[in-house]
Length: 346
Image (cartoon, rainbow, N blue to C red):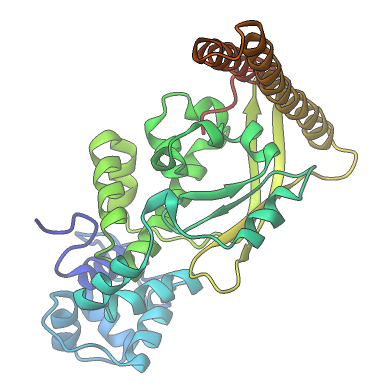
């Protein structure tokens, strides 16, 4: 089965998509009257880059040799590409061989179970007043702190496969209620996946994810077809949480050292802002929820010991104690869910 995330001529597809976005005026060319298609013509791109029209046509058709760095740089200038788009162009021009992809698959981890250094997880968990997560370029959430779990999604209760922000945004029907700027969140999420696909076109987890999103979301299919790419760096996001209302946060991303494409994403609120007040309230809610779980577990242990002693320490007593402990732990978990007021699904 062919990989659905890339075509045999992904470089040509990207060049066509990008030149359609550049008008002659944008490129500094004189107007030429009515045009049948948007953007630049092939011969105009060839002129701007300094190539023969024949070579550029063969490049778009996938019949040319791998272009040199000089040609790629010139294409980037002619098509007005930004840094992320130029990096994607280079990835498409020099795709990895399948043998290398198989080697990465054999040595790497799968999906949300991806290996993460314990110290990185500790860094995230040590941030008490700001939501923070570590993500990979498939949008898998690999680590989180309590405030991120309260604001974004109840990650501890989700199976690893569902700890993926692309799935939350495109497949959860409540995502638009959570992400107040859903259109922008969706566009950047697809752009991140496109960048990953250029780097690793045969990544089985990525192939599976894009296929699932394509089947489940018309919006995803439209955005994927646009060939937009995005590298997560910094910006602003607006969320809605049922317990605290709207929360507007700035975010910054940091490359985790020693891990390819693992990003630490930290969300912060301006000092003395409504968002800062909302985060403090949400932190209190999360702390109360955690206390509820701890109390439930402690009650379970106490009930188990008491029941065991009452039953004379027999096997029946042990079973009775275990059942009581389980019931108390379940009550603690229910208290946590109630305290957080149905944490946001995305």
